[in-house]
Length: 262
Image (tube, rainbow, N blue to C red; front, top):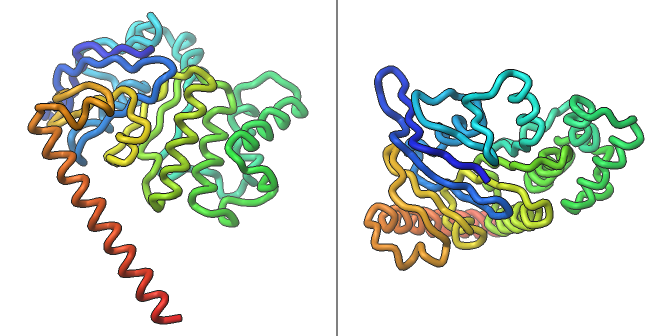
């Protein structure tokens, strides 16, 4: 479990997140949602230690990250898995080498054991047979799954995902959602996902934190989203649904054009 208490962060005199408190529960997919510029990315960066807040507390299972020494921070970082928006695989490494990278950096196991662990992670995300391929030789969805395999290679207690469905088609996005949700349950991790995708919210949103203009406007489950009386949340859902429908229409038009050209 991760607890955020009265977190505030400003840049150049402008408050970006203001007195945010939230609990991200272990064994659940915790989603931070909000429009672009709402402060959700800054909140995530504060939680994982990339940015230091002006005030407040960030507590990982009873350990306040703001009170840790360098050694304690290094220990905590080994317990954290990160899934970046762009997948961030190394182009010069094979899929297997990419997954082995954190093991090579932080594990004391012999090479054979590290390779075995990496292959196990790739099998978990249904990427058997891709070990010797390079990122340029696999699809965007496969790259995202390889990035998930790398993120869980060290068996983290905490998994942070920044817009994991960015750039993916709806079907592949659903597969990635289900994969992250399944791994969260399997490992009992505290998973925190930064997203604006309402499909993800309604599919795997077990604990949802809605941020607007740097303030936590609403917190609840996907079952409570529709019945919420929060106007700000309702406006966000409405706008997100319109955007989704517009993108689907655009994709349909493009498919028809492609078929016409063929």
